[in-house]
Length: 114
Length: 113
Image (tube, rainbow over all chains, first blue to last red; front, side, top):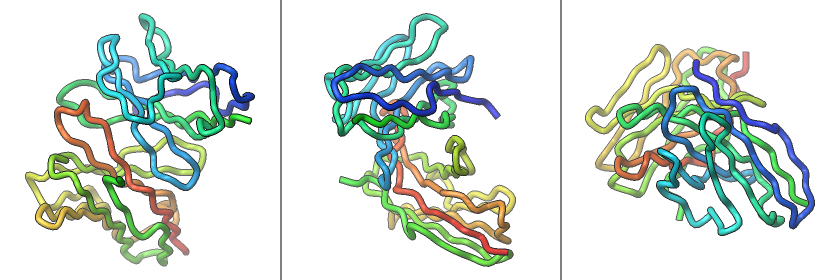
């Protein structure tokens, strides 16, 4: 099936540093999502993105978070500065269009903030 | 507030048995209910999904039962195989919200040969 790629698979950084998580969505998909999963808890919605804009963000999407997708390139999640509580697995997902429900997920980036 | 609740958190069945995983939800506007499964180190992948126009959806050995009145839905895996051993997530979303998914905590299914 369609594949979503995420780079890197793991990232360890010191608190206060900046990190960028990269997502390569399915090529013709129009809607993009980030979800956060803390160990032992459910995946939680962070943000969705369409047509170059954030459509909706949750309360987990702090001011230190930003997303973008420069033309044809990765859909990125940037955290600047990072905090200890940002340690989690971050999943990217993409969806084809309005009448297509299925979200396709990447394998996740495991972020550890020390 | 947890929008989607999932139980049990883990389940072990023998090969050939039917595994049953349960979910309930709070938000009456939810109108799309997928189940994802995830193998270690891999992406969550859509297994089967239902919309509330029907109360049952089958795809091979996998069946979703949906009860709108009680706000519950379940996944039944018939004739379970060791290869079905994985973590299963239920989720829900509503139209008009950009289809953001609210997930359950996941259930680890082990099928013993």
